[in-house]
Length: 191
Image (tube, rainbow, N blue to C red; front, side):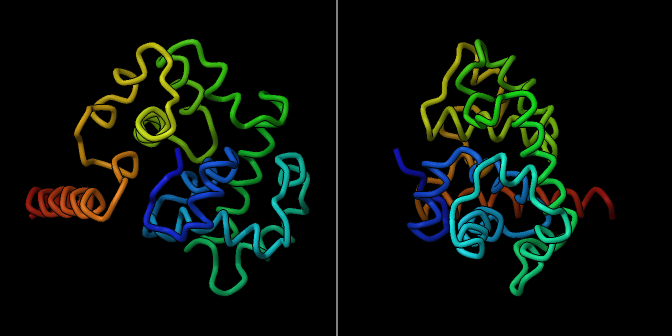
């Protein structure tokens, strides 16, 4: 299975093959378009000239990593903060998963355990953990018992709520329409 997110084929291949790249993309998926968030891991690899290991990211000089994130065009709207969050994520993966980011999900015995592990990652909260669990289950075949329930509404079959549901242009349009409707409803409540 190869992801079909609205990024380049090279970026999709990296995200599909490299669990750390996928986690970084999800971490960066806030306050920027999803295309930016999920293409930035590929851009990071391009800037470094190689795919960094988790240990390399964990031990990178923080100022140097922030400078790589800040190179124009910046990898995120808040490059210094997101470089730090990426490094925090890498450190946690080294400390708790022996440097193997895929172990976050490959060793989870249940959907509930998977969700708890994801929610404890730097840059993840409850909703982002559910979205990532849904992405893993729907698109990458990571389906421990109870994964749909753990993913909540994002795990629902046929939904169009998040990046977990994007497989082509039509599903991207459906997710965008859903998010647009959510924002309109929020504005109406605020008025």
